[in-house]
Amino acid sequence: MKTSDILRKFSPEHKNMLNILHAIQDNNPYNYLAGDDLKEVAAYLNTTLSHVYGVATYYTMLSVKPRGKYIIRACNSPVCLIEGSLDVLEELKQLLDTGIGETTADRLFTLEVSECLGHCAMAPVMMINDRIYGNLDRKKIADIINEYKNK
Image (tube, rainbow, N blue to C red):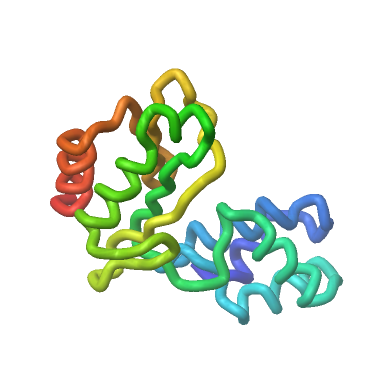
């Protein structure tokens, strides 16, 4: 779907900017907002490119750089830290052979850190795209990553 088709689904009001940006990003196979997309949004909302860029770079769920098919967000909240989120992050880095903020060579995964995913009762947790995984340990993490690799 073209960006212009997505824009037509929303009225050209500033209050729709986040929903527009999410819809455009979700439509992109590399899960990001390209420069041309940001320009189209600015024109559609009759605002400046710098304003749209500022919004796109402020929110961690949005990206202006290409990412993998699956976005993995490891929770870094105090509760998750106490329950072993640093071990989760290290296991993910090792399994994926990538660092925080990086995308795997096959463009399948991007590893990010989130301040809180809001599922403290299941700590430590991670999120892959829109799905939460909790009570993580090394084996569970490996099983989950293998499941996504085999999709």
